[in-house]
Image 1 (spheres, rainbow, N blue to C red):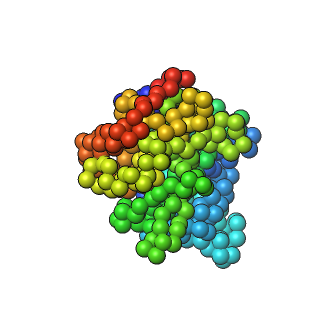
Image 2 (cartoon, rainbow, N blue to C red):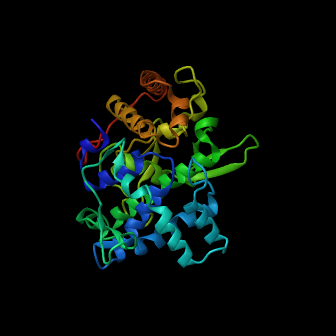
Image 3 (tube, one colour):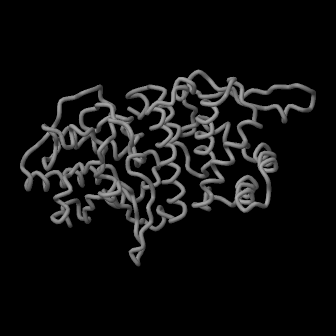
Length: 357
């Protein structure tokens, strides 16, 4: 059963597009954030490329300031124009002109495509408005659908979460390209204090990658991993999620070789989940207990989502837990037995919502 089939909501169709699409360039992320912008500001459902070009280009230009690598290929004319704009070599009008000509060549057709097929729920339709003969290319636009307005017209915490998830995915992808994570098998870890995912080089110089909440929330569909209660990643929300270690963090000094013939990094992404406050530290919370076998199977499913989505940390996850799904199951089972021998007690909360896995 795939990611959307379990809970086919508009939010999860959006997440599938952002999380499971190909990562060869960052245009889809820039377009996604631009669609959010225009859905909040527009007076019409028809958006001309003139109106879409500037927010689209500015999102990319902003990311280029801190992450020069925004695709796996050569720098094209669109990215070069964004770089030139940042350097003051071209003005806003010229940036819009180049974006209209070069920036929309593939991304509008590819936006809804996940694993070679388009999702069934679409957020805009392609249209051609002809005002004069031979001037069609100057009047192209997209028509926003009701689906997009339903998601973002009221910019509540749910909409903010989707925006943050998009930004976090973008940060992960560009850092993976910059650090060549897939090739170098860089170890990505979790900082308990800042809740950031980070990596270190041989000289122990640290690079922050993205927020752990934003990176994980989409795969849990804004629900607590343990009880399915609604959670949020917005810092001003009462439902702000805790970042929890599935296998308790206090085991860290003891787990050098607890798993399947490989070192165990309890701060790795494979062992991090988002939890409601009640499950993590409430009166009947998990604390230092070992989650049940049912929850262990859920962790395996979540990790397979991460790997199957070609997550930027895919190779790190495989390195930490196993090359094949069978190896990864064995790793989790052995880690479970190790934890159970030391902490004794099992834990599982009562469900507070429908299953998302």
